[in-house]
Image 1 (cartoon, rainbow, N blue to C red):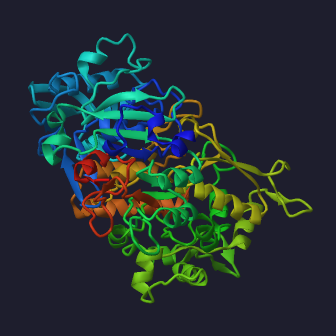
Image 2 (cartoon, one colour):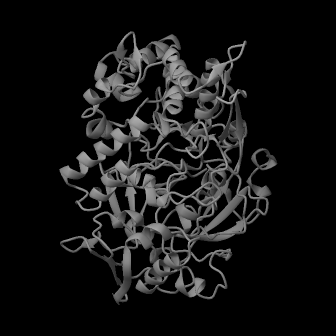
Image 3 (cartoon, one colour):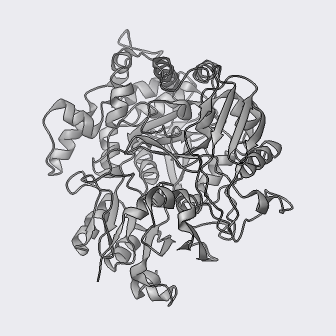
Amino acid sequence: MGFAQAGFAQLAEDIPREKTFIADVLTGRVGTPANFNVFTTAWRNPDRGVQQLMLEPLWLVDYVTGEVINALAAEGPIYNEDFTQMTVKLREGCQWSDGVPITADDIVYGIELCMQDSGMSYNAPFNLYVDKVYKTDDYTVVFEFKEPNARFHANFIDRWGGWRPFPKHIFEEAEDPLSFDFNPPISSGPYVLKDFDQAGYWTLWERREDWDKTPTGILYGMPPPEYVLFYYYGDAANKVIAQANHNLDMTDLTMEAFRAILERNEYSRGYRKEYPWVVNVDPCMTGLTLNNDVSPFDLKDVRWALTLAIDIVDYIGIAFDGAAPMGVLHVPPTPVYQEWYYKPLEEWLKNLTLDIEIDGEPFKPYDPEAPFRLVEYVKERGYDVPKEPEAIREMFGPGWWKYAPDVAEQLLLRNGFTKDANGKWLLPDGTPWKIAITAHPSPSHPQHRNSLAAAQQWRNFGIDVTVNPSEAYAALAQTGDYVVNDNWPAIEPWGGHPDLYRVLSPFRTSYYRPIGEQAVGHSSRWYNEKLDKVIEEMEKVDWDSDKNLQLGMEGLKILVEEMPTIPTFGYPGVVAWDEYYWTNYPGAENPYTQPYHHWPNFKYMLPFLRPVER
């Protein structure tokens, strides 16, 4: 951490601090720092600048503006009448950073390579649907499908993930595309690799001289920072020290650390300038993922018991001091998703019953009063909150499940669980029930905060729980080497569009892979034939149709009933921005784009930042 304390000059004397933007790495220290091949199923820390600066997708979604941006594609996807063919028109004038034009040859080659090798990303969905792919000219690509699919373009929309083109003229020279480290990487985005730390702590990028040959430059102009440094500081205290010394422009923090930086640095600010300070439009739903291939999490009763053993008010208090919106669906309770899904499903949630009776009546687990209980906690903490019910639901969520440890106990007892003399739970085979939660390595990340809160709730319930932060948490999830982790309970929705294909499709049966194999769907390894039918129907209707909205609701109902993963609260983005060197961030008062440094949209934020003369 000497870098943070001694100053920017320690990195390189020829890199001016005032021309450099410094951001934290959200997903931790890079395990394979010399490997920039993010096109395989292996985890390569794409948020160290690879997805934000180096790569441009065909399309990119911005959940703040609510638009799908045409990046390397010149326009939206063009389907034929029965959705058996999709045409993509590419943007002309874009070049790889070595001066080679980006053309249809790159797209066709990349798709065919991914279909040939199961170790490449998107191998499964491409083989499931693509009959053939070809070009009709240098900037037109045609996909012909094996069966109708009105949602195939979703594979190419970048939103912390999406198939991104890579250079044919580079990869076709590689002996093995899976072991190829793509170093030095060739960029389609506005920055190129300058240097990186062999220990995986930092990656430095330099603005391309031909930045105007990229979608970023063509759409938004030149990004003012000549250099962008992604640096992993680890502990939140280190981030506070770094930003107080003006060596960290943009970072995520814990709520405690955020308060500390406001006291230490007059130039620091959050997304909002008052409580709850957090980003409240984030389209990610946080929670807990259970490995459904591991006993006893393969039992629906066990999954529901763990859910009902959580007091959501205490849970959010532990995780974020109350500053997070609760939600029971596998989509976040942002204002738009409350309108699209939470409100239409409210009566269904209120009438939902579990297969268990309490006092002779079927048990209804939903608690619409939970946000008002959270308000009382927030008031006790000394914060001002609105009084209107609608405003409370918008800020703290529409409701959650009842805290019902007595019901959770009955669900376990009828499945052969018992308790020892100390009130600790024993598995049906008589051994102590121990849960090791594989956690995100950063203590400021909402995933990590979920692990801490869940561990305390389940300990109170009588389970022996440990939290194991790991820099390899993402890789372990992909191979199924965990029992519970804090990965998203479902892939995030688009944020700016009601379509839920992205949320539901990873759970399809054909994507299932056993433990030990790389997951191609959701890492929970749960699948359901009823949900398969919903997904198949979605692929036959336009994503703007009412029918698609209804199918999304049906899919959410199945997830709620089966509870393969446990949604808890919408992502409360606690960000701290230092305005000492740079200003004009996309805060709540000027939300021109998404407000994070780790999203691929970051390259579209940079042209709007303004240097501060010091």
